[in-house]
Length: 214
Image (tube, rainbow, N blue to C red; front, side):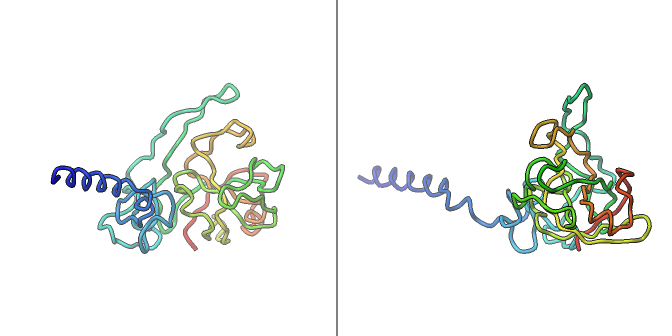
């Protein structure tokens, strides 16, 4: 009888720890996460783990949430497209208070070169909206969806814009990505309105900028 009770208790324990109820628990430092809501307090989801927000400069977890500035973000693979081979990345350069990036231009409207609707809200956006897509590492699994960032050009002008999509550094060359190759790992892909506000000529195609959380 005692053995039966023990086995029943043991079975209940394994059912409990595998219960989906526990999968919705708030994660602490270095805990697994899928988005910002999975992390406790001021922590954010970075590369699948809850960690300090580098833009806030917190040290709740005791260590910086991004690799040191000397750490390289190396390609994770490659993708062959239209006879060319492109590197793919799951990471982006470390985020600082003034993160260096390359600004590109994207049409987020239906039928534009953005392809499918924006990943954050499953919507298309007018060219008059100040919206951006971030490279995969900076997009961080959607943790920055809906957040405002400040972009500063070399001419000294700045603009705030909303993160609405991922500039996919892992995939591309298909209908979903408007048959474009994978993004590089340091891209802020801005709408026409972003370029206009910065006083830049979008026909240049790509320019150096810095960005930070607004």
